[in-house]
Amino acid sequence: MALQSPSMDEWLKEAKADPSAKEVGMYLVHNGTVREDPKKLVREGIDDGKKVNGMFFDYDEAGLKKAIDEAYHYPGVKYLRVWLNRGELKLGDDIMYVLVGGDIRPNVIDALQKLVEVIKTQLVVENEQYK
Image (cartoon, rainbow, N blue to C red; front, side, top):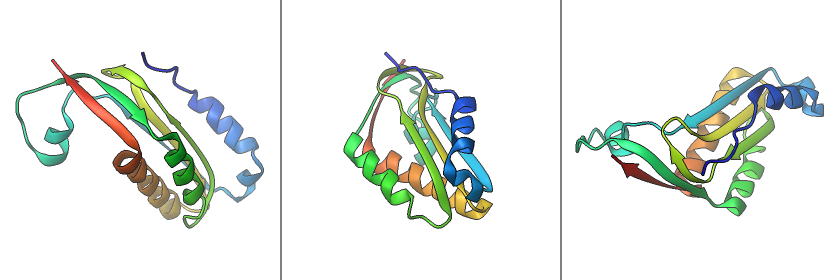
């Protein structure tokens, strides 16, 4: 069963109350969700006719903490918050939220992309379930 997703309104309110807020010119949020098209179709163009109806999702907690700590050293990053779901997820369920606050747009976009890439390629287990 999926976990309760966080409120982005609350996250942004907390981020803007953080001491780092005076150095932040942009916040950017990534929200990954379970989609019907399989990863191999979307990423590799391989269409075997299967459709996703859910997934099992888990992650390496220690690895995530390390990735977040390292992301604070990316250029311009001043604030980070990450939430990952866990367990059996259905279509439309939230997989993850990543919030990055930083000095300027290019740095924030690059940091978000890099951190999500580390999470997705090194720290998570995603086993798609098919119809």
